[in-house]
Length: 582
Image 1 (tube, rainbow, N blue to C red):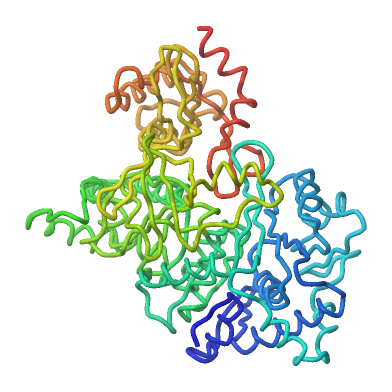
Image 2: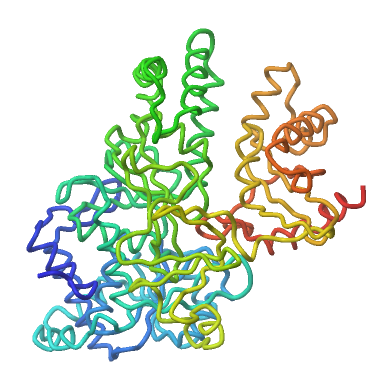
């Protein structure tokens, strides 16, 4: 029977695929697998344990953990009794924890490790904390699970039957690039409709493919992805950490995974850094292949001579790239922010199909997605509008969305809900254009700014172009109400080391190098070269080089690695002031 609520995916998977490995995570150095039937038994017993603890339909439970099967168990168990999960990013501040616990009126809290437990304990009040690890002061999840083992399944079945497709199942507090997070209310049908839409464009074989999951499950992108993978009978393996990603890729040999552009940028930069370490003919071949790949367009016939060269490049160079990803990847889904054109070109040339999509937490999340074929792939576009979703462009260029995937609203924020949902359309805040069913994102409406001369600047487009430089790792365009745009630049220090080695410049420390006149001159030339792609009023006139990279923990990036513009402007106000004083 076709699933009508998200927890129906469990019996659906048993009936259709009966997986030996539904979910898996390494424990004590070995992969521990849970079958489809294990999943059902554990989730049912957890649902009964929640009932025994007195949790009622509509009450909220927070989940704060890194990715693991236990995360899915709790999520699905809550759904079955009509309770509401409140996923929380482990990396946000304890004051944000407190805000979410209070705003959502959370009754219970599940945490992953000691660090999260310590942070949650500070602000949990009288709430009980349960943990996925053995921690002093917290109830271990398996001890909680045991409370439901001998309880009545018949009672549970009645409660499951009472859950409707349009019932609220989760409140997701968006990480936000500014201000306090908003609680996005999503129903079963919101997410399940999106699962069915994206399942139709996944290329790996149903029932037998493997997924490596590493994006946070508390974000709707990976969470909807996980439900989709369950629906398709894919085995989901949770990576040990981002640091272990390369090792886990080789072990699991995934057929697909979800990612964000920032991680693809890091993979690409690491590959190029290794290229610089080569010598002689090997180095020459590497950069010949790279140059060839950067010219590739999957939607065009590149010609017989180009195809012949690409075949050689694939055999000699790009095959090693594919091996580094496990050697069996058929599809990489990229979302959450804009993908650089050069990355799309070079990965497709290398036989690594990166399919860019677009969506928001409020749309469960997918609005459009690239279909993984050369004929349907358009570089610079975020694919076609997915099935059962409608899009139109407002007069000011804003993207408006309608469909079963659109949220119910923002929790306890009726004014914000009314602002976002008008006349049956969700106002995304993104600027874009349509060509038939193909969608292009040009910028974030709220991120666009005017110079003092009244000219509009679209920073995201500029930032992606500037990051194509091998010397620039991160960059943010500034200049609202100023007379020209400027930039804060975090150098790609590995690329800078290679440049210094090539020029015979002794490398001391990152901090010292970015103050040297010859290095500043090099960045001047780099910026000037990239400015040629923009109109005169858009060009970056001045910049400041920064010695520390931006990160999630340090507060400059959201958990999905988008720039937290307000936080960066606040943190670097002295540097920005100096730029405009000079």
